[in-house]
Length: 285
Length: 313
Ligand SMILES: Cc1cc2nc3c(=O)[nH]c(=O)nc-3n(C[C@H](O)[C@H](O)[C@H](O)COP(=O)(O)OP(=O)(O)OC[C@H]3O[C@@H](n4cnc5c(N)ncnc54)[C@H](O)[C@@H]3O)c2cc1C
Ligand SMILES: Cc1cc2nc3c(=O)[nH]c(=O)nc-3n(C[C@H](O)[C@H](O)[C@H](O)COP(=O)(O)O)c2cc1C
Ligand code: FES
Image (tube, rainbow over all chains, first blue to last red; front, side, top):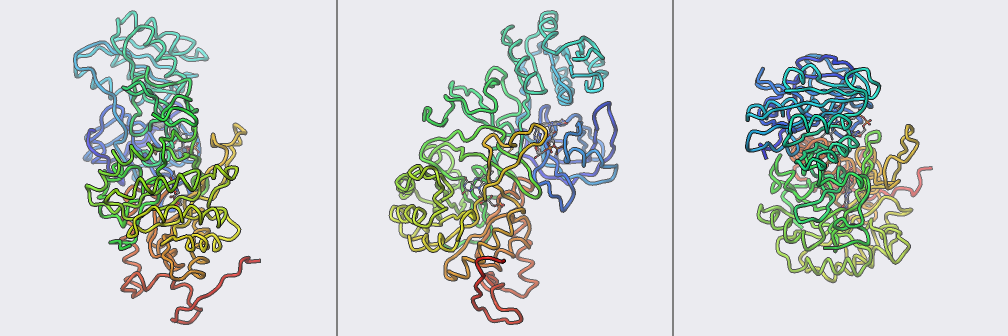
């Protein structure tokens, strides 16, 4: 692991709106210098006497060396926790734990990678693109969302990527449709060697199916409901096939969030597959 | 059972120990309590397994775990090597299964105590949990006690979801329990009003966190009043040193920390530090002086037993 996680009481440096999202830059030395692409952090929400007991997980969008190290988070308001975060102002404090999870593995040799982001999922792809390009890889982007205001990072993708293809379901930006509609063309044109994807589970399933069709490796970063983020509560599990061919209910927070796409049993997420290790009435290997 | 300090982790809330060790030394805990170990590997319940409620957490993990063999091979040795005091929690579907688990653990060195999670469905009683009924709980405890080395204490973990927690506690002690742990999570439920479906895949789940602390304080209070000589490990919503002290004043001689670890992975050493400061400020040199202290009559320094009415109505 790239350094063990720490808890930091950070100070909010800047807040900004980016279309449908909020971006929060937090001074968090100790977390920033340990972050690798694909890592996430968790934030305690609601202040000191909060009634919200569980931390909220966010991908690290950007890491900068300023003020000893800052991390930037990008999020949409979903419920009370993200609403509280959206009200934070510069100089407020924010309690973070990180870096958490298993980051994206990087290819050993230069190759061509397609990076697919759905909604705010693209937030974690730019640090990845940086790392890939530093290794001499070619990077192509495919970003999508239901509507234009929910496509995150299109400008930056255009600056960094060899090509950038955008999709929206309502046609308000780029091609009308989903990322999976355009992905086969992008993979074929770029002669891509690998795919990385981050976004909603449905999208990850579709992207994996396309990559499998092309017989190229695919890394997906999954999102599951998490109570702890550090691997102790066992609430964030999903069925993943191990090296030994056995399906286990593994923790998204510590065994992931990055997995090899073809190993994730997307059809069975939210269930205990009958052949999973320890499934009721199943195999007790 | 001698522990270096009175702050433990609660079963099912500290992972394998390795995860917490990234933040602080597990050997400095009063003890590390394992998740409830079962005979066979268990995949647990489907997701979503958690829902946040006001100052609480609902969970339905369903005792996911590797089974006793993998536990003894991959998890326990790591804890033993670090010099951790280890409370092994066990769970089963029949008294015989609990006894078989206790036998598997009997020859294993390094186990400080066995905690019996009685909030498991009794296969032979239409899935009613053992903790709901004194005789079922006592049968399990007696079979575990008989299979466990004499110098390893057996702790009965009780549920607040009973009409008379004192009756179950007494039955467990009569069955051979050396100590009691309370409370396990009461069963709760939450419905997502947007999807108009239960928030948890399992429908119901166990409620933990500060939301249940008054329940824990009441259970510890009643049991300590009835069985003042029996050591109690108190738990349920302990988040600060003050919370720990509250359970100790009610009659617990140690506390366990569960849900608070999810928000603060350093919770155990912090709570211990806060508790020590609070005791000192109150002029209590020894923790033992504080145990059950709230039972003394108002205005007196004497410790006498106070019974609580069964109902507050
Ligand atoms: C590894 C990871 C990375 C993430 N990165 C981002 C990101 O970069 N930007 C972003 O906007 N969101 C991200 N999320 C989702 C984000 O964690 C949720 O939107 C947030 O927890 C919702 O909190 P809330 O209080 O607003 O909503 P509520 O729905 O009220 O939350 C209630 C509870 O459910 C949990 N929860 C609800 N939805 C999710 C979810 N999708 N994932 C995990 N826990 C959830 C919360 O932690 C909380 O305990 C990420 C999730 C994970 C697991
Ligand atoms: C996610 C989770 C898993 C748990 N797993 C177990 C378990 O395996 N065995 C057990 O006896 N109690 C289990 N518990 C109950 C706790 O040990 C504890 O009794 C309860 O949560 C109250 O303490 P708390 O409010 O500090 O969490 C679990 C609780 C939670 C939240
Ligand atoms: S969120 Fe707790 S184990 Fe993954």
